[in-house]
Length: 418
Image (cartoon, rainbow, N blue to C red; front, side, top):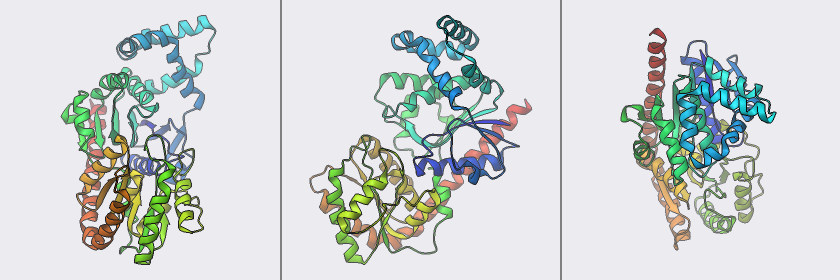
């Protein structure tokens, strides 16, 4: 069975990598002789899948396919639905016109055609978990285009571990309305915000399931026998979190006091570990302000290593959503720091999924310093009470996710037999 896998940012973000790891392991286990083609290169896939048949799609093929869309740039800007309509309903005509126009311009089309041909032979397009379906990231439109390419070739699409929105852009909203309703199944990591948005985008109820995040499985399996004694530290300083480095000093002051009060070590829990918005830099700055010499978690380069670090905590203070997932799934309460609609939705959706143990604080509130101190104290004192309920909720989400994957197998088996 030929499986094309779209993942996102797995070489820079350990949260995305953790969802990818779970997805690849499950696909390899439950599908019959899967031949997996990765649209995004992942340097760690061999350790994830062992002897599984996995290949990276050539970068130039992907870029060539993506870059051929600008051949229709003026039409796409003026009437984007027209290009999408041709792409899905009359793909052969669209391919012919694209190739003809490229030839007139003297552009090479072989790489683009090879990429499209992969979908001619594919049995499934699998979109691995992520919170990329939002107008905050340019990749959202590319994923919609990939889904429509699969639709045009009659390839069923499955999406797991998805966080949808917010979507304010009318262009992306309309594109999502064309791409998502025909997806065979969309498994959501939270219901509070993603579910109503999908319904508004025209996705039928019977194609939506709420399973929780795929990373819950990986984190839950690493849980220790008892609560740890540390305080986990993470802060996402990025344009999409709307948190600036100015918050570092305030967070450091509160964490320093909490560390002294409870004689608790401050442990780095980085999720984005490379690139411009790396958590390592912000964690290092916080711990430096506290007077701790640390690499900020730079030495933690796999999801499992960060998960185990979160498991050594009694409380995790995090500006990263997956810092929360890693902790809650092991029975460790969380204080989530949010200052944008995107992170407000992520953390409040996560809090609803687990029911208890996840306090969300807006960092722009006037009493933030006092509120953070109170939230840490509350989480610390109630951690033993929360632990069993959090672990039970993690197990419920894992069961729901396994059921959704099994439903995918059933669908593929029935479609093959027909």
